[in-house]
Length: 160
Image 1 (cartoon, one colour):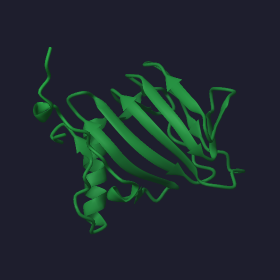
Image 2 (cartoon, helix red, strand yellow):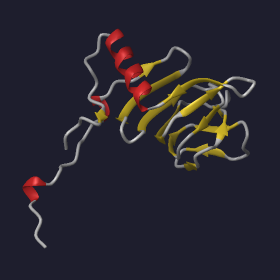
Image 3 (tube, one colour):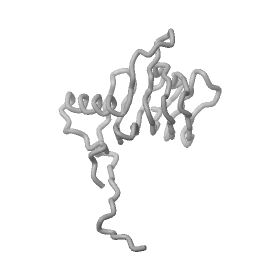
């Protein structure tokens, strides 16, 4: 079998400086790397200041996380994610992300998330939903508000 190389898709590269960090004002900075709405996939890199607690949420799909600096854990678990840690979360998992206030550095985590995060109220009801479409929309709005150009997030329309 022969393959035509000139018709094969090519890789899509984004350098670290190609996508800006957006500060949410609550101790978290995020850059959206990928938002594939049709695939139900978003990939973000998030930096957390010491002491940040992320709202309890349920994942409708699998999540993969790699920690490059700092540490974090789930309120509901005993293990701690540290630099070099890899974590797999199955669909249906429910947890509250906590960054220890005792951390001496920013915690930097890469998340690959399928499906949606159902953000839960104290009574367990769904307060809001975070998915690829909402993450991309939020990121683009925050970049525009900061006077930044439309970020080159890899999306369903990105051609490789």
